[in-house]
Length: 485
Image 1 (cartoon, rainbow, N blue to C red):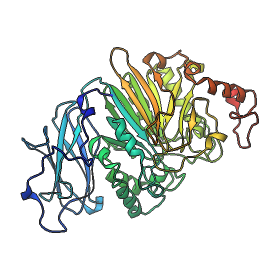
Image 2: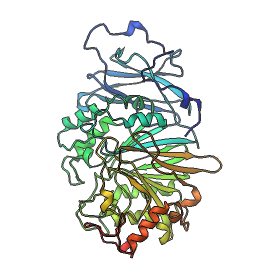
Image 3: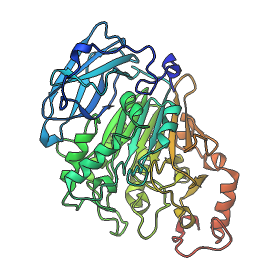
C-alpha cells in the first residue's frame, strides 16, 4: 500500500465534518423535489491522468462534474456534463481528464445546474500512480442486502484503507429476469451507510457471477443476459465492457505496475452439466483469445486473474459451477502461461461462501504453482462446503466463521512482493500471510509445499492415503481423486 500521508487523514463522507468548507448557500435549492443524487456518487475506473465518477440522478437532466486540488475549490475545474436518461435508470458516468498522477482531487456534482443540498460537502479521491508503486487492493463477493442490510464488513474495509476495491460477483442477489428488480437491488446496495464512504473515495471495479447475471447457476444460454448486461453497465463504472464484437464484462486494469485481468465467467459460459472435455468453455473463444493475447503483451511483474468462481478443483462435484468443472479450459490457460513463459500470475476469486487460499501445483507440469485467494461472503451466510470439497492443495484452512474480505498488498520496490491476507468481520487477520515474489512465479519453481501450513500438508497426506481430509473416513460425496493417486 502507498505510504503517503493521506492514509492518516480522515476520509470525507464520515460523520466528522470539522474543518470542512460548506458550499455556497446561494446554490442550495429552495423547494422539495430539486434535482439530486438518488444513489452515489461512486468512484469508478482509475488512471494516472483521470478519475471516474458514477452517480444515479433523480431525473432525466444534466449532471456536471466539478473538481479541484483543494477542498475549498479555490480554483474550480469543470469536467464533463452528461444527460441522465430514464432508459439508463438515470445512471451517468463522468470522467475528469488531464490530471496529475498520484494526486488527491476533490470533486462535487451539479444536477441540472444546482448542487445537492443533501450532500453539502465535496468528496475526494486520488489518481493512480504513473508507474510502479506500493498499493493495496481489497476485494470480496456475495453481498446480499436481503440477508444483511447493515453489512459491518465495510467498517473493516474502511479501516484497512485500500487504494482500490474489487467486486467479484453476486454483488446483488437479483435472481430475476425483471430489469426493475435488478435496478432496485443495485440502488439499495449503494445506500448502505457503512459502504458509502468507500464508494465515494476509492475506485470500485466489478465483474458478475450468477446471482447478478441472472438466476442461480445461469449461463450463456440465458435469454435475459443482454438485459442483465445493460443493467450492469448502468450501475458500474469499469474502464470497458468486453469487446465491440464480443459482449461481456471482462476488461484489463493496470495500477501501480500490476495488471489485473477481470474475467466474465457467465455471458459465454457453456452449461455446467456438460461433460468436462476440450471445447467446454466458461469464457468463450473470443474472451479466451483476448486473455491469452493480453497476458503475452503484459510487462507487469504481477499479473492477477480475477474470476467470479474459484480456480481449484474444490468444486469438482455435482452441482459445482467453478473452474473445477471447467478443468479442460482452465488447464489450457495454465499450460499456455507455462508454454509462453509468462511469469508473475496469481489468482483471486469469490462465490464459495467461505474464505480460501488454495494452490494449483503447476510446478509438477513444468510451470510454477498458481495460487488462488478466495474472499466470500461480504454479506451472506457462510457455508461449510469445505467438509465435502477438495482442491489440489489447501495452503491455509478454510474460513467459515464469519463474513470476510480479501487483501492484496503489492510492494513494488527493489524486491517486489505480493502479500495475500484475509480479514474477518472484526478486522482480525485469520491466517498467516502468504508472500509471493517474482521468483516464486517462474517456470520450474516449486513452492506449494513450503508455503502451505504444516497442518494442511498432513491433511493432504491423509487424504492421499484414502482417508478423509478432515478425518479418518471419507465422507459421502467426496469427488474422485485421480489427481492424488
